[in-house]
Structures are given as C-alpha cells and as structure tokens.
Image (cartoon, rainbow, N blue to C red; front, side, top):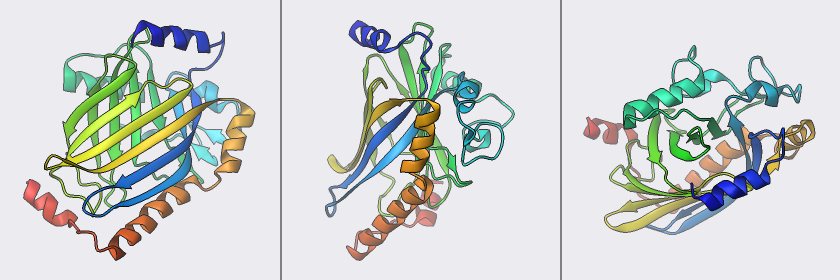
Length: 265
C-alpha cells in the first residue's frame, strides 16, 4: 500500500470505529466470446475483521456467529478445519503457498448464511501485515453447480492489485478449463472493487466486476441490510441459474464437468 493509501485509511477511521463493514453495490457479469451476454444485479457483502466477529454480531439479535439466526457466520462454511480459528487457517494457507506468514489482521469479504442457506461464489480474505499494509488476498472460489472449492493466493504490493494466474477449477458449464485469470482490485476503504477477466487463446472471453460502497456497521445498518435484501441467497442462485438458461437458449457451447475433470487427471 502506498503512503497516500495509508493516509486515506487513517483519515477515514474515527476512534473506536470497527474495521468491519457492510459493502453494497453491483455485480456485473459480461460474456464477450463466443457470443455476447451481460447481466447486473444488486448485492450486499459483509467485510469482517475476523478479530471483531463477537463485537459485530453482538449489535443485532438477527445476526450470529455461534448459533442459528436469520443471518449467520458459520465457521464450517469457510476454509480449513472447523476446529481451527479461521484467521489461523488463512495464515497457514498463505504460508504454505508463499513461505510468508501474514501477522496482521485478516478481513473477510463474503456472503454469509441467510435464512439457513448459503450461496457464496467467492470469498476474499484480505491479509494485512502489522503496519496495516495489504500483503495478500486469498480468493476462495466455490463452484455453484458442483460445490467444489479452490483457493488462489494473490500477492499485493500497493493499494491497487493486479495479478495473472491459471484457472484451476471448472466453475461454469459454459466455460472451458484452459483459461487464464487477470485479476485487478483495490484495497477496501470507502469503496471496494474487483475486476476479473477470463482470457483464452490471447482473447478476453469473459469478465466480472464487483463495485461496492461501504456502509458502517451498526444495529440499524445490520437490520436494514436484511430488510433491503431479505432473500440474498435466493437472489444470487436465481440469477446464476436464470442466466444459465438464457445461455443455453443462445446455444452457447457446453463443457461437461465430468469430461473436464477426467481429462485433468
């Protein structure tokens, strides 16, 4: 993170304010090849400092980290063994992948379990050092149709991140495996953005953009998020399958999961 980014972060934060927040905005999916197709939907996502979970969920009886509730953070929904603290599981993963163990805060951008259900295509773990500089992002990607999961560790050296890496998991029946991801993002502050491009044979085939603005966490903002988006899980899964049906009727090429997995092995 550059010094300008650090100054902005310090300037924005009032004494006693939580690092955790609610981010609201838009997700856009844009297919370019072999045929154009695009859709956008509104979402909110939780940005949770994993050291603040108790403080956050004490603000509202509708939210919980340790018992059933309308909105729930459930440890088993995320990476690592259920009996290991999530922040330590993230640090262990980064250590295995890079040889460096982040020692600062771990902050999670994710959907939670709403009304008992979870659809969470991507979770991002922002790994800071002890000087609050972002060192790594762990992108935890879950395939909605097959409930498989993979993790990508993305190195960061500024307030704007850019990285390229090979696709390692079949995510959509309308996309092949032989693709490269081009990742761009900005460190979460008053706004948050992620832009992911899928490239194949030297051409951009697809991109997805997340553009969100921060809402400070309070009892009222937690309540209002559930009122504005009462069926977040249903909304996300409906969008995924409705758009898949549209792609099918557009006669997009299909890539069968079983065949791709057998070829991979």
